Every structure is written in structure tokens, then in C-alpha cells.
Amino acid sequence: MSATAARDQQPTNDLTFPRGTEPDLRAVSASGAVAPLVLVLGSTGYVGGRLVPRLLAAGYRVRVMTRARSRVEALPWSERVDIAAGDASDARAVDAAIAGVDVVYYLVHSMTAGRGFAETDRAIAETVAGAADRAGVARMIYLGGLHPDGVKLSAHLASRREVGEILLNSRTPTLVLQAGVIIGSGSASFEMVRHLTEVLPYMPAPRWVRNFIQPIAIRDVLYYLLAAAQVPGSLNHAFDIGGPDVLRYGQMMNGYAVQAGLPQRGIAALPVLTPKLASHWVGLVTPVPRAIARPLVESLQHDCVMKNHDIDDVIVRPAGGLTPYRRAVQLALGRIALDEIETSWVDSRVPLAPSDPMPSDPEWAGRTVFTDERSRKSRATPAAVWTVVTQIGGTTGWYSASVLWSLRGLWDRITGGVGMTRGRRSRRQLTLGDAVDVWRVEHLEPERLLRLRAEMQVPGEAWLEFAIEPQPDGSTYRQRAVFFPRGLSGRLYWLAMLPFHGFIFSGMVKRIVATAEAADS
Image (cartoon, rainbow, N blue to C red; front, side, top):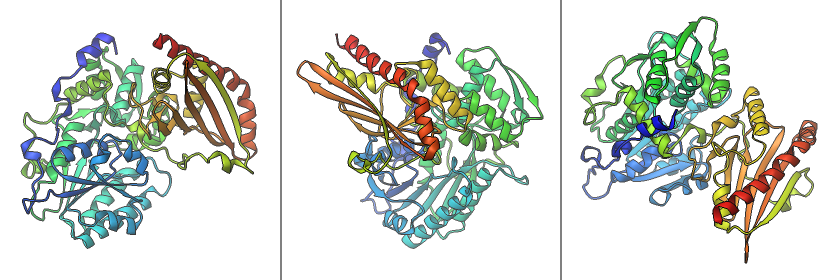
């Protein structure tokens, strides 16, 4: 997208709608004294991360449940919520988290999980439903998937439908909101459309580009979720939600092209691309990895539009109406241009990636570990060096051997990993738990230490550390790569990479220090 087009896309002050402060969305207490307590499951996900601050703005008391307390504590609203540590599959932890709760938002789904994800989703849904019944919760709200009737659904859509049925069959009144393709800055569906359109001027595509779908703007999804907490009584029902436009997938791509200032794309539907092959192809052309692309592609195998508009009898449409598709694209591009993406698919966890913190140095005794350590004194202040370090990755790159980094990322994509094109949510800010290309922020101490953990396909466990020590005349920059090999393949991998490491890591040290000194001069 050109700079002129990007400027044209910059949105106005309605970017944050709904804010939660709208009168119709404000919390209403039955007693009139204490605000309702809401439990959000999936609070660090794409939708949950946007819903929580709006619930707080609406006046709700909010509790979140998370396996990674530090991830929530790094978010700007963390001090305003009650954090319940635990896993949603742990019945005791769920019982404790749900105690005293009025409304439960169920926003969890094993979208990127491997085999057995349906069993996991089923078990979690049954656990939460049972806990809600025992606690006397007034309402559950579940964001499911829009799907057609009378056809064989993909495994992921079938799982989402099953979760909705489990919740509806509980004794707790439940609203299931079934949404299709969500359009918003940072959503995987939007990024798939964006990159397919921008990369390919002519696209041989699967037959599903001719299928009809009904996209919905993320702002409208948030509006329905907020309004659902206001629905009175014991209504227990599933409702389809969608935007005002019904489009073919190819029309969505060309609608994006118009908003981005690009020529219309030629699209040829081919009968030979199976969902598996198409997900491989999407994984190579776009930043969306195959693990996420496949369920998205599979969900497009049939026409998927609202079967009815019964939701209008329960929740009044937002003032000004629902957001048209091209307006949703414009708003998403505006967020990207302003580098104000609230949440993103890139911050979703990678299946099978290590999740434990790096072992501390004393625990390395008796284990095989390879390291590459380098340091350099700088006349730049720690703050200046920190600014350079925390802008690493994404569009900034890695300050050294960009071709080698790109080749490593391409190999990672080919072998099923996330690759370098995943990028990062924000160009300027870095938060604990954020994704940075093939890495994830594991530890962050401002102006002192940044530790990244590898989520690439690698025979072992790998970390990259950036440390800064203040000095009377500037600072000392220290850089360390740590690798715990797995078996013989891990040892051979490190030996094979040594020549490249010498070139890449030495270049990184020099460029990072030089960039910081130039900015601090």
C-alpha cells in the first residue's frame, strides 16, 4: 500500500467504537449498588483482549482467568482486573475463578491445536458449564462460528458448534453469538485477505473463492458481546451475527484492493486445490502459518451466511447501523497506518512451542548447552540502546544479514513453522508475551533486559537475550544466544549454524550500538 493510500486510510475518532461508555452498554446492577462481576475466559486472545477494557469502561467488575499471569500483568488494564491463575480445563481452578460471578464470557477455542483439539474443547466446555451451574451464574456468552446447516462441517467449525451446544444444554442461560469472518486490524482472517491481495496481482485460487460469506467488523462483534450482557431473563439461544454485506471471497479481496489503492485482482477458481494444499499455499504467501490457515480455509468450503436475523429482536443494532465490509477494511488499514493495533493473531500461542521459561544458569550444570555471547561498549545511554533493541524484528528487521534471516524464516514456513513474516503487533511498543517474527517475548525489564524465546522449527530450545548495563560514559550492550539441543540432530544443527551465527550475531551487535549512538548524538 502506498504512503498516500495509508494516509487516506487513517480513521477518525470513531476507531474505538464501541468504547463501552455508550449509555446502552453500561453495566446495570440488579441491586443498584454493586456492579456485576464478569469472568472473561480468553482475555489475552484477539477478541478478549479488546473486550476487557471495554467492559471496564462500561462499569463492570472484571475477572480474568489465565495460565500465564505475567502475560496479563503486562497489559495496560491489568491493575483494574482480578486475575485468577489457572487452566480452564482444571475443574477446581474454574470453580474458584467462577465463584461470585454474574456473567461468563467464553472466548476460548483451540484453533491452532493439533490432534485431539476437539476433545480438549469439549472437556473445557463441560468443565465451565458445570462450574457455572454450581455457582448460579446469571448468564454465559459464547462467541462461536457462523456455519451452514445440512453439510459436513470442518473439524474446527464442528467443534465450535459442539461447544455452543454444551453451553446451551447447561442450566445456565446462554447466548451463543455465531460470527463468520471477522474483519479488523490484526485478525487472522483480515491478514489473509490483505496479503493474498497485496502479493498476488493474479491469483489461481480454490473453488471456495466463489462461495458466499458474510464478514463482520470486529467493532460490531464487540458491540454484540457487550450488549449480550444486558439481555434480561432466561433466554437460552444461538444467534447468527454478521455485517450488512454478503460477498464472495473473491469480492472481499477486490474490495480490499479498492480500499488499499491497488488495481483489481484477477482471480481464477481451480477445482484441484484441496483445503490441505490451499492452507500450504496460504501459509507460504501470507504471514498466517499453516496451523492457523487450515481451519480458516476449511471454514470457507461452503456458503456461510446468516440463516436469519433473529438477533435483531434481542439486541438493537448499533447507532448508525452495522459496518459495511469496505468501511471495516478502511478502519483496519487506519489502525495499521497509525500503528495502533490493539490485539493481533500474531500473539496467539504456537502449538507445540516450548512454554516454560529459560532454565536459570545454575541449572545448566549437567546439561548440554551452546551459547554465543558478545558485548560492546557504547557512548549511547541505556535508554537509547533500549529503544533500538525493542524495535527489532517486523518491518525494522534484525540489523544484520537480512537475507539469511529471510531464508531461515522461509525454511521455517516450509517446515510448518510461523516464519519471519509473522512480524509483530506494534512497530513501536513491545509487551511481555508479544510475538516478534519467529520469537516471543519471554522476559522484559525496561532499559535492562529483553529475552526472546524461539518458536521456530528447531531441534531443541533456543533463546536470544539483549542486556544493557549503564556506565558513567554511556552503556555496555550484551547479547547472548542460548541453545539446548535435542539429541544428535540438535547438536548437528548448532554446528551447521555456527558459521552463520558468527556473521549474523557480530553484525547485530555492531549495528544495534551504531544505530543507538547515531540516534543519541
